[in-house]
Length: 202
Image (cartoon, rainbow, N blue to C red; front, top):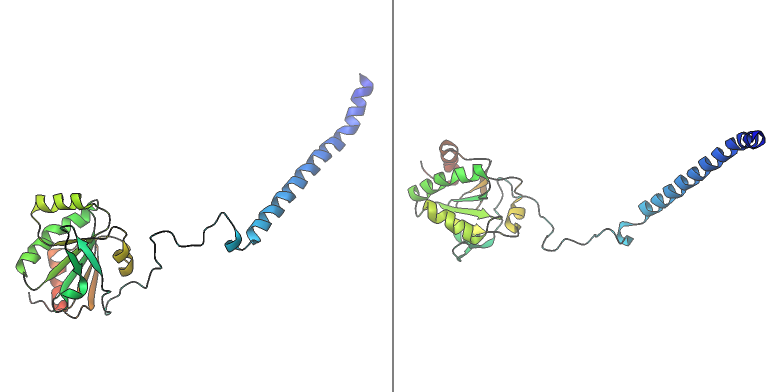
């Protein structure tokens, strides 16, 4: 028993050294594999897709103040096809919103008020990318709103305009040039303060 113990004690450092050596070899191998994978061009890797996601187009530069508003064609919740270009000659508000956005919903009575006050002159186009047609129809009927709501289910127009958050409102003059951009909830003072920029008298 004593002899075996003595032998074991002599061999113990070699056993530990062997185990540590094996661990080191495994770590080096793992590092080499990881480096090799990292160095493989992305286009040759099967776990990474470099093709665009379905339904997502390359995004243009966002619409900015002083530039022509990008034209678009969308269907309203009532089924009418609306082209922004058809509104040239009138001042226009283009508003991006959602029913789940409380600040957005808070703006709606104000939009209805100015719709009625500037009937025949001001055009309000609200763009919704997240709610379905039935939900919007119920909301509009319940509140007796008459301004236009356009459906943008793939967020195409939202992306074209570079909308980063909602609510977001673009003020267009009769030539369809963006004269002001407002992020956040509009107040009565805030909206009327911008009307002279798009040719509306208070």
